[in-house]
Length: 463
Ligand code: URP
Ligand code: ZN
Ligand code: ZN
Image (tube, rainbow, N blue to C red; front, side, top):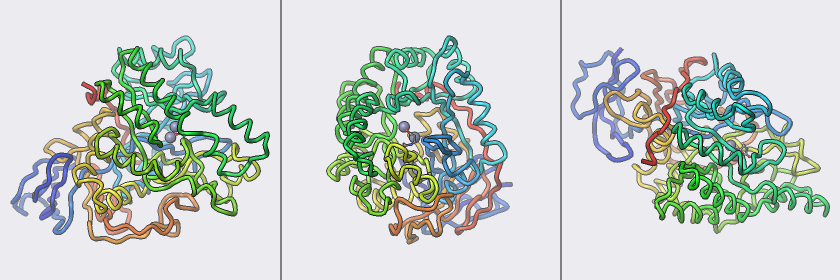
């Protein structure tokens, strides 16, 4: 069935224009002003609205075992919440269990998503162990559309890998065209600082942040980029949180090195004081890297403006306060690391980015959809409004006032990091492959309709 979106202002990463968008089934057929109503069986009026490409969140953790528990959203609840916020594609992380093949993890994560995902999803692979066949296994995964791998420089004995492993994996991606995503914090040094803190009886949530200083992030970012340079591979720094780390990325990019980085709304809008909330509520803000002192925040906004940072993702990794965060009541190291955010990314970036004059509309689209699609091998199927692209669109109401609260959000978690924040601008209608899945606050999609995204290696962003 053809659908016509009329009278809206179409916003892409490069252009803003009054135009109609004609959808033919799951793809976009035509974008131009004055498409006649007769061209479609269904007409959606978008007068006064922006029509933007569906949001792409390339950093989520759904149904993920971590810290002795499992993240609270599964592929059904998490992707449904994402859709409410205008996100139509995610890239989640499968985790290779040490001593097992990456292929097993891919099968496990496909099963988690099957029958549940409400929007399209890709998968990165977290590599914990190269073993004897890990490098060939990476090639096999690339053929399955897993075009990116995450490595941890933090969490010794759990997820951390050594520099030799990092270098081997980077060198393999120089050949197979995949992208290494780096969790850049010096885990060995952090563990020493943590042991000192615990020995001094410092067990409250704030010590999670104080034991992971910005220097430990900057050192790891520097090392990650240096190893990537030696290997002749691009590198993507995930959830960058500090000015110190940003300086490392900027310095490398200024030299022409293909280093990329994302940040997340929490690092742009929240600061370390949140971890000092009474009654253990600081635990709601325990994730890694941690929140930083306030002076880092404007530096990260500058990084977005100047393209030192290319992507805004969420690192959505929700744990309920009442029965999960509480595991660390007497010891901050036992607080499951992660926070919820999959639903609110576009609202927050539009309000504090576009409305506040920090980002143009086009840059907002670029950071939340088009560049993630490019870097992670989904463009121009995703992240674009043009003939032939998937009809993943959001009809965005720039005047809608919305208060973020756990009382009404759709994430399966009992708190919001942005409780009570009032934003202007929200998704009115969300379309995924031509199907209206959210309209006026009502969910019309179906679990299981989301398709696996086989992503291309060499997304091309570093050419
Ligand atoms: O605290 C966090 N960020 N939890 C999710 C895992 C990760 O490191 O991204
Ligand atoms: Zn991480
Ligand atoms: Zn993460």
